[in-house]
Amino acid sequence: MIGFGTDGIRGQFNTELTVEIAVKLGEFLGNKNKGKRILIGEDTRISSPILAKAVAVGASSMGANVYLMGVCPTPALAYVIPTEKFAAGVMISASHNPYYDNGLKVFNQQGMKLTLEEEAEIEQYIQGETQLVRPISAEVAKIIEYPQGLEHYIKHIESFTKRNFSGLRVVLDCANGSSISTAEQIFTDLGADVLAINTSADGFNINENCGSTHINVVRDEVIKHQADFGFAFDGDADRCLAVDGRGNIIDGDKLLYVLAKDMMQDDTLKDNTVVTTVMANLGFMKSCEKLGIHVEITDVGDKYVFEAMHKNDYKLGGEQSGHVILKDFATTGDGVLTALKVTDIMVKNEASLEELTKDCATYPQVLEKVMVENKHEMMELAIIQDKIKEIETNLGDDGRVLVRPSGTEPVIRVMVEAKEHELCQKYVNDMIKVINNI
Image 1 (cartoon, one colour):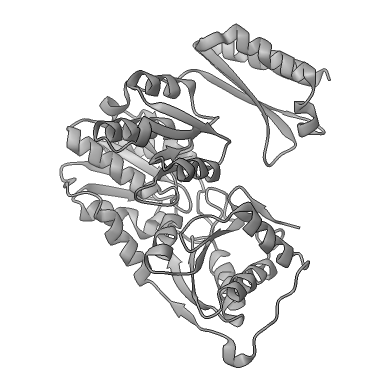
Image 2 (cartoon, rainbow, N blue to C red):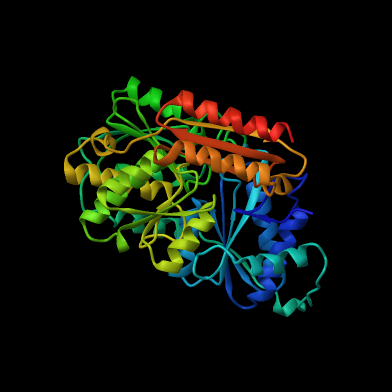
């Protein structure tokens, strides 16, 4: 039975993720929030309005009033929930996945993702392990269209800068996804000369050869139109990557570097700390170290990044994939907000994106995976741990090795970073040889 992963309930529509599951999720939330309001948003997949209505039917049938926000970014939903006092929210999206997948991301009244205990409660109900008492007809509630929620979010985002972006030419790749509802309008309102691409969502083309998973598309457009820079978003607009005016790809590490350096200079980076995952490039970590910025490391997943930020009230965190969390402004990653803040820093410093990122080093990296029968048992073997220690000793401070079980596949991922690509490949091969010989 399908359940919660690191980013909600996700699977192929009508195969793993069904309408019945969406209705059950809605019933659980509706029962828990009788007489209260629940907010639902969706991305542009063909199945998203189907699942949105299924959640709405379940929740309203159990006594919660449901408000439909329509197509919107995940961070828009997360913002509107607490500011407009909704009891909970559900975003219908599978983020950067192909159109045939979809997902149910659940948020609490603070606009934050659920705890493991809360997720387990929902899973038990979906799997039929617990039952709920259905209300009589007089206790059921309404389903209400709520497009004004998106308008409130756009005004909120635009309020983060008083600077004008006139004179800047920017390419925005909206991935035929949620950012079509916000990105172009926000940058245009702030005075930029905007070329928005992949804005014709048809239900099937979300993330298809576009967006942050196909960064070469926006890079080609930046070069072709001699733009100052470009941003590419994913399907639900909670992450973004960038390209500078020369066509250099600016990943999440470098975006975090730009933001962290600016916040440190403004004395808004609490404890001079930025939170990221074990997948962050070693060059990024060393570049931050040079500035006096501490890098806090978590497991892979924005959920773990936010947990570390929330626990210590750190203000900035994110992932190499472009999922950046600015805690004073959002409870989740926000691709359009990230793009806006980075552009604001460019205007403030009268500097290009290339100039702002040139001091952030990137070490060569080799990442490969090995199919195994039992990834967790394999990781506990002494021969594996001994080999990891041997490679760590050989690399010293000039590199690192990361060997971890995949969260979604029966594989072990092996990653090595070092000053030379050849050294990375050598140690990856050595590690894989040990795994294959077991």
